[in-house]
Image: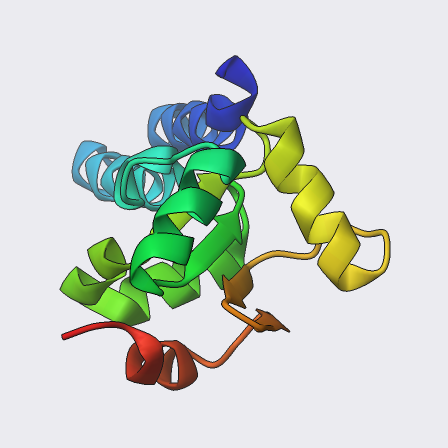
Length: 140
Protein backbone atom coordinates (compact mmCIF):
# COMPACT_ATOMS: atom_id res chain seq x y z
CA UNK A 1 0.00 0.00 0.00
CA UNK A 2 2.82 2.42 0.78
CA UNK A 3 4.20 1.89 -2.70
CA UNK A 4 1.02 3.49 -4.09
CA UNK A 5 1.85 6.79 -2.43
CA UNK A 6 5.50 7.17 -3.43
CA UNK A 7 4.88 9.52 -6.35
CA UNK A 8 2.50 11.72 -4.37
CA UNK A 9 5.00 11.91 -1.51
CA UNK A 10 7.82 12.72 -3.90
CA UNK A 11 5.80 15.53 -5.47
CA UNK A 12 5.02 17.00 -2.05
CA UNK A 13 8.69 16.81 -1.06
CA UNK A 14 9.75 18.55 -4.27
CA UNK A 15 7.04 21.14 -3.66
CA UNK A 16 8.45 21.88 -0.22
CA UNK A 17 11.99 22.24 -1.59
CA UNK A 18 10.83 24.52 -4.40
CA UNK A 19 8.75 26.63 -2.00
CA UNK A 20 11.60 27.05 0.47
CA UNK A 21 14.01 28.09 -2.28
CA UNK A 22 11.58 30.57 -3.87
CA UNK A 23 12.69 34.18 -3.99
CA UNK A 24 9.36 35.41 -2.59
CA UNK A 25 6.99 33.76 -0.05
CA UNK A 26 3.93 34.20 -2.29
CA UNK A 27 5.70 32.57 -5.23
CA UNK A 28 6.80 29.75 -2.93
CA UNK A 29 3.24 29.21 -1.72
CA UNK A 30 1.87 29.11 -5.26
CA UNK A 31 4.56 26.67 -6.38
CA UNK A 32 3.90 24.44 -3.36
CA UNK A 33 0.15 24.44 -4.10
CA UNK A 34 0.85 23.42 -7.71
CA UNK A 35 2.90 20.45 -6.51
CA UNK A 36 0.24 19.57 -3.92
CA UNK A 37 -2.43 19.47 -6.65
CA UNK A 38 -0.20 17.24 -8.79
CA UNK A 39 0.41 14.98 -5.79
CA UNK A 40 -3.33 14.62 -5.21
CA UNK A 41 -3.99 13.91 -8.89
CA UNK A 42 -1.35 11.18 -9.05
CA UNK A 43 -2.38 9.59 -5.77
CA UNK A 44 -4.99 6.81 -5.54
CA UNK A 45 -7.46 9.36 -4.11
CA UNK A 46 -8.68 10.45 -7.56
CA UNK A 47 -9.76 6.97 -8.56
CA UNK A 48 -12.90 5.07 -7.52
CA UNK A 49 -12.30 2.46 -4.82
CA UNK A 50 -10.25 -0.46 -6.11
CA UNK A 51 -11.58 -3.98 -6.13
CA UNK A 52 -9.69 -7.21 -6.43
CA UNK A 53 -9.45 -8.63 -9.93
CA UNK A 54 -11.62 -11.59 -8.93
CA UNK A 55 -14.34 -9.38 -7.47
CA UNK A 56 -14.28 -7.04 -10.48
CA UNK A 57 -14.52 -9.96 -12.94
CA UNK A 58 -17.42 -11.46 -10.98
CA UNK A 59 -19.34 -8.19 -10.91
CA UNK A 60 -18.61 -7.52 -14.58
CA UNK A 61 -19.89 -10.97 -15.52
CA UNK A 62 -23.17 -10.16 -13.75
CA UNK A 63 -23.81 -6.68 -15.13
CA UNK A 64 -21.49 -6.26 -18.15
CA UNK A 65 -19.67 -3.21 -16.79
CA UNK A 66 -16.04 -2.76 -17.87
CA UNK A 67 -13.09 -3.57 -15.65
CA UNK A 68 -10.32 -0.95 -15.74
CA UNK A 69 -6.88 -2.08 -14.62
CA UNK A 70 -4.73 0.87 -13.49
CA UNK A 71 -1.84 1.87 -11.22
CA UNK A 72 -1.00 5.05 -9.29
CA UNK A 73 1.35 7.43 -11.08
CA UNK A 74 0.23 6.39 -14.55
CA UNK A 75 -0.52 9.54 -16.51
CA UNK A 76 -2.62 7.64 -19.04
CA UNK A 77 -4.74 6.19 -16.24
CA UNK A 78 -5.16 9.67 -14.81
CA UNK A 79 -6.15 11.03 -18.23
CA UNK A 80 -8.74 8.28 -18.62
CA UNK A 81 -10.10 8.81 -15.12
CA UNK A 82 -10.38 12.59 -15.45
CA UNK A 83 -11.96 12.45 -18.91
CA UNK A 84 -14.58 9.98 -17.68
CA UNK A 85 -15.61 12.37 -14.91
CA UNK A 86 -18.44 11.10 -12.72
CA UNK A 87 -19.00 8.20 -15.11
CA UNK A 88 -15.77 6.59 -13.86
CA UNK A 89 -17.73 5.02 -11.00
CA UNK A 90 -19.72 2.98 -13.54
CA UNK A 91 -16.65 0.83 -14.22
CA UNK A 92 -14.81 -1.50 -11.87
CA UNK A 93 -11.27 -0.30 -11.10
CA UNK A 94 -8.46 -2.67 -10.15
CA UNK A 95 -5.16 -1.29 -8.88
CA UNK A 96 -2.54 -3.70 -10.26
CA UNK A 97 -0.01 -2.65 -7.61
CA UNK A 98 -2.39 -3.79 -4.88
CA UNK A 99 -3.62 -6.95 -6.54
CA UNK A 100 -1.16 -9.45 -8.06
CA UNK A 101 -4.05 -11.21 -9.83
CA UNK A 102 -4.92 -7.90 -11.49
CA UNK A 103 -1.33 -7.51 -12.69
CA UNK A 104 -1.44 -11.07 -14.04
CA UNK A 105 -4.69 -10.32 -15.87
CA UNK A 106 -3.07 -7.32 -17.55
CA UNK A 107 -0.01 -9.37 -18.53
CA UNK A 108 -2.31 -11.98 -20.07
CA UNK A 109 -4.02 -9.33 -22.22
CA UNK A 110 -0.90 -7.39 -23.21
CA UNK A 111 1.42 -10.28 -23.97
CA UNK A 112 3.52 -10.13 -20.82
CA UNK A 113 3.86 -6.49 -19.82
CA UNK A 114 1.82 -4.41 -17.40
CA UNK A 115 0.63 -1.64 -19.69
CA UNK A 116 -2.23 0.30 -18.15
CA UNK A 117 -4.90 1.41 -18.40
CA UNK A 118 -6.21 -1.86 -19.72
CA UNK A 119 -9.98 -2.13 -20.07
CA UNK A 120 -11.66 -5.52 -20.19
CA UNK A 121 -15.23 -6.01 -21.30
CA UNK A 122 -16.97 -9.34 -21.87
CA UNK A 123 -15.24 -10.71 -24.97
CA UNK A 124 -13.04 -7.64 -25.53
CA UNK A 125 -9.90 -6.05 -24.07
CA UNK A 126 -8.29 -2.73 -25.03
CA UNK A 127 -5.01 -1.26 -23.85
CA UNK A 128 -4.93 2.53 -23.29
CA UNK A 129 -8.34 3.19 -24.85
CA UNK A 130 -9.62 6.55 -25.91
CA UNK A 131 -11.83 7.92 -23.10
CA UNK A 132 -14.69 8.46 -25.60
CA UNK A 133 -14.54 4.77 -26.54
CA UNK A 134 -14.95 3.75 -22.90
CA UNK A 135 -17.66 6.35 -22.21
CA UNK A 136 -19.77 4.75 -24.98
CA UNK A 137 -19.52 1.38 -23.24
CA UNK A 138 -20.41 2.53 -19.74
CA UNK A 139 -24.00 1.98 -18.56
CA UNK A 140 -26.23 5.04 -18.22
